Image 1 (cartoon, rainbow, N blue to C red):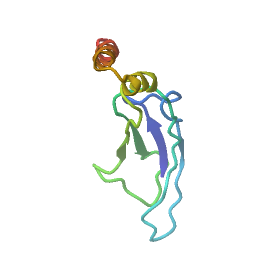
Image 2 (cartoon, rainbow, N blue to C red):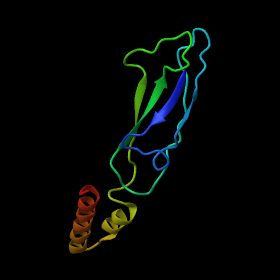
Image 3 (tube, rainbow, N blue to C red):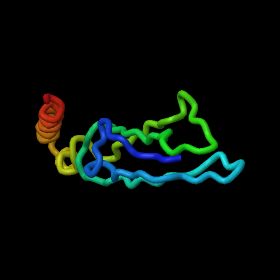
Image 4 (cartoon, helix red, strand yellow):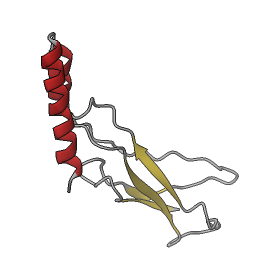
Length: 116
C-alpha cells in the first residue's frame, strides 16, 4: 500500500519532513512502521498536526477501511512559552517587580503570536 504525509497545521519542511513510499505486507502481516522525521525548533508554538494517508492507488490484494485510510499525527510542543529567552528572563527575575514586568512581556509576546 502506498502512503504519503499531508500538511495540516504542521507544514512540511518546517515542522516535519515529507515522507511517501510503499509498505509491503507479507501474507498475514497486519502491522508495519513508517518513520517521519519531526523537526526540532526552539520557539514556542501551539501543538501542530499533519496526516499520514494510505492511498488506494496501486493497492493489491487488500481493501482500506472507510475510517482507516489516514491517521492524524500530533507534534506536541515541548518548548517553554513563548520562547526559551522569555522563560529564562522570567526565571531569573529575583525582584517581584521584575517578575511582574517579565510576565507582562510574556503576555505581550503571546498576544503578538496569536493575533494574526
